[in-house]
Image 1 (cartoon, rainbow, N blue to C red):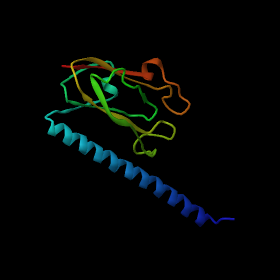
Image 2: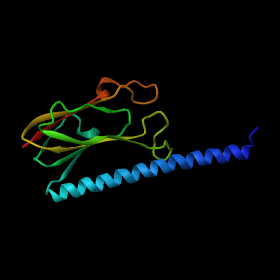
Image 3: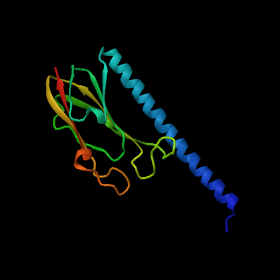
Image 4: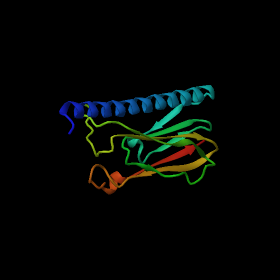
Length: 156
């Protein structure tokens, strides 16, 4: 039978492992952000960042401009592009979980974290980015208004 001290030590090691994994994910995301920002500056393009507040809007970008989509719940599923002629997705969607905390206002089962995708604009035209989710928290089904996200991208 394990003692309380051994159980506490194991729980502390588990928390350290989670924090270490979280730290590596943050460093990776920061390195990716720095790389994409440098690439955007090198090409003379700015980065347009889209999030929940962009839902329903139209955004106009120039060819070679970078577009980053960041949604603040790991329950979001970002749809594949219907055409890669106008936008090219760079890499895969990145799901970055964060540990629930009382300070951050996120509780376990709420989808704590972000999902992000990076794109580069190619040719003139109009396309749409879509994301959807069915859960807005642990055992909490999303309403229709909160379950779909769409932005129209116009490339000049």
